[in-house]
Amino acid sequence: MTDTSDILSFGNIKGLGLHDSGIFKASKDLFGWKNRRTNATYHYKPDEISAVQWIRVGNEDNSHQLRLFLKEKKDCIYFTGFRSLDFPIIEKHFKTYYNIIIKEFSVNTQGSNWGNAIIENDTFCIKNDDKILMYIPTTQINQIALPSKSEMVLEFSGETNSEENDDKLVEIRFFIPNIDQNETDNSSKVELLRNQLTLLSGIGSSGSVDKVCRWNDIHLIVPRGRYEIEVLVNSMKLHGKSFDYTILYQSISRMFLLPRPGVTHINLVIALETPVRQGNTKYPFIVIQFDTQQDEDIEIPLNLSEKEIQRFNGLSTVMVGRFWDIVTRIFKALTGRPIVVPGDFRSASSYHCIRCSFKAQDGLLYPLNRSFIFITKPVIMIRYDEILNIEFSRMSGNQTRFFELFVTIKGGGDYSFTSIDKAEYNPLIKFLQEKNIRIRNLQEAIDNNSRRKGSSRESKISNKSQTQVILGQDLPSDDEDDEDFENNEETDSSEDSDLSEDSGSSEGDEDSLSGQEDVDSQGYSSDESLSPKKKKIK
Image (tube, rainbow, N blue to C red):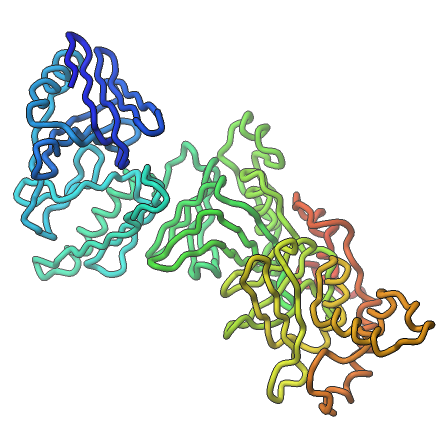
């Protein structure tokens, strides 16, 4: 320890929850800590501090901790490794130059797992016999849930200063006993504590300052339930019956607008870089479902200034249109991410997707121009540049009208989509060849066909013409005696060719969605669920 007239310096001090040691210094105007390994320096001013505590956290003499509470950030920082002899020196320096009085506290070392919950210096604190049991900075709380009337679960973001391989606290569960044998009073205590932590952590309602708009009773498929969505300038908040989520726009990587076949529903899929958690379950995708038939043109005013309207392209003071269209335009403008819509693919029924199953879950597989996406349980996205090869195979048993699509990923891993109707074989395989995706057993069939036909005339046939021959044949299978499959082959092939001629294809790659006209230009006009029904004129 170095003690001059105006500057204090202490070595071998661990700071900010890191395992690295460093130097803690305090001058007249500021104090800070320097990491000895990374040379990173952290400075703080005295007017940023609301309170300071001195706590002994171990049995050794150099296990004293200096804990400081920040005003605006509502967080606490701490430095560990001081000796008992350092306290009078630090106390005098803080009182003389910073006008801050350091209070001494003791830690409960009896192994108690219960205590009184209080809010102290904007920090959630548990104390037992006036001794500290634990501190929980409210800024690290990512979600608060009430599984029952006597339980409260806190989930943490994990964004701490700890290293990658360190253990991190991600969830803690509190039980609030019903002392008065009155469920109503006990429930109000739990909700009161939840409301206080929600306000301090910032995951609750933000008020009218940063709020752009709010939508009530929005149907979410993933995670399932009905939520109130509060749209802010930099994030959106989902308020459900039991769970609340805060999603930063910078954590959104992609967004997809996918119409469901044969119904009036359309799904907005939001891909997240940081999944939201609900207990032990992680959700890397948010799926919102809209009913396009019930929507009429509505007006939604936005709480934005003229400068903010000019800052976000595509927004106006009052948004006019169908509800699902307004939602997608607002998210597109605030996040700066394009809305991906289906492109060239058309199924045998002229839809943008095919019905299939992943494991035991039925769903829809959308072959987009750059990736596959499967909805809804679970939501799976596979980029074409990540695919090593694709293999088609007939399903086992008596399910002769269905086949399986097996996708192998580069670097390991695979996905198996089953129960795909035989009529989707030709449209799907043509689309995959146009995207230059390697089809494993199709290439093997082409090679075997070339080896069997050794004449000079047939050897001049190009791979493209041989591929056309393979497309007209049956699915690759070891079972060649399936009469039911062969009898329907000619009929299904003719039906597939007729459907492929009638169905149109959109131009270009996956494009961004800027409004209703953009949706129609991307091929949605062929989907009856998104087009208003025309009345017959008598």
